[in-house]
Length: 259
Image 1 (spheres, rainbow, N blue to C red):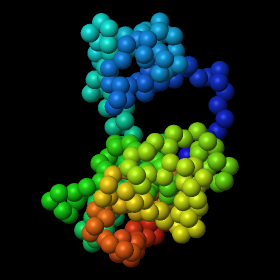
Image 2 (cartoon, helix red, strand yellow):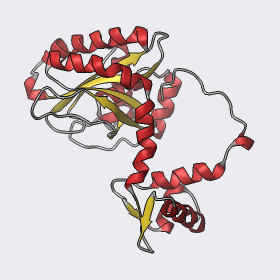
Image 3 (cartoon, rainbow, N blue to C red):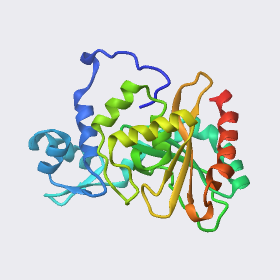
Image 4 (cartoon, one colour):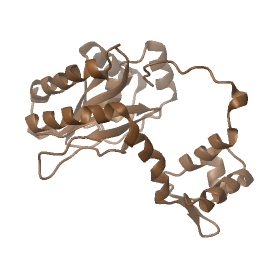
């Protein structure tokens, strides 16, 4: 994923392997599998049933999970792990007043988004100027190939990094417009790289379009994107780009010197 700096090498002898395995067990739960047996958790976390059961019982003991003796499920306490990041993440906090002001200007909700492996994570969102709003709220995770900020963030990778990402990605289809061919998707990322912005039209939901720009810091590094999701019928032809791209660019340029 995009990174502002390469992490320093870490001596594996200093790592606590059990912590990594425990986190894998937490990540084994998902929207489609909210309840797991120890065997299922082990399979998803690449652990033996015995090891997975010990981690699950530890999560139960510390209040992060519950069990009926066979199945295990996560409890709200797990949200503290993600909330800690949301509270200390610097760029989304800095960007909040900027996206709020832009939202009032254009009448749409804006988001700050990051790439986490093969998903994008929505970190902050302007308060909607509309009574009924669309788009994603902080904490939402979406496959990167179906939303504009995914293309925008991937456009900042070098060719080798993009190739590696494409080779490992699951191009699931959500609508008849979803791009599921890796070669075609790579072309779309190339277009986003040349234009400096990405446009996704009904890749995830019918009737919705998105626009996104990489949000680069003063050194040109990119970990975030600025995006907007709209009802496509409200912006026919080229109006989405004509009306909203200047608004997004103004925010990006204003933020670049201070992030």
